[in-house]
Length: 318
Image 1 (cartoon, helix red, strand yellow):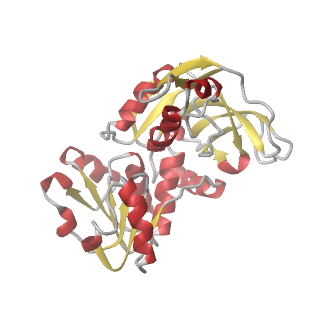
Image 2: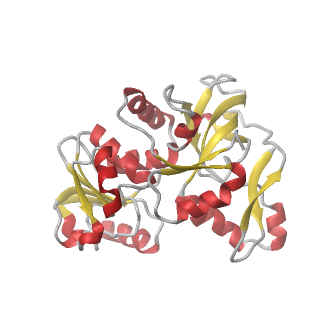
């Protein structure tokens, strides 16, 4: 089968389209999915790509494909314990444990980490959802988001942010989105009640207070956003950047309400997202679509920091 793997090593490894063996030896709870589409997340180039950079030339030759977490496709085989999915079912989900490798024509994934694909979405649209939408849903829950409360979403126009705005509105929150001037109308169309253009001054000193500050960029910390938080306000970050990763748990140790989202793919949460999609209150926003052979260009687009929504890879039509 075709898959994306590392080409080269050191400071500038590349991504190459290779021919490799299809996954075999399904565990009892695994399904084998013919991947129609996958998507790119910052985790892919912050972690997986860095693993390739650290590998020696010998290791590179032995590294299995490990790129891609999100997928949407069709079940073509299943383990002996799988009862809820039949061969031919259209599914979507993700697994961050470096065993799924969804940038490939086939991928192995646990039945616990997938759900039936929303009927009103294409495979491309469905592949845009799992990691980003689950991060948004679980982050809002972790921050005690509920009807009537106020939330500030920092990075409202990006992959996680576009889902966070819509899901927060589904939960009944009053949403203020932070974005650049060029994205103000875009974020308003997503449903945000108020918009802050971060290029027009340091909003961290003038806005608020909010019941929840949800930083989906991971560039802020509880300390840089302290003036934005109400008396019992929560700060939630997606992590991924050094300052946020260290400051957020430290702030919590000091008795403050803060946390980092450690996203997991649970079927019940995917089904919650599916219900929103099929009700017409949640729509995946796609920035751009690449072929499997163009995966490195897709990574570069995601790394640019200028995406409106998700970068998706159309695997089936490569």
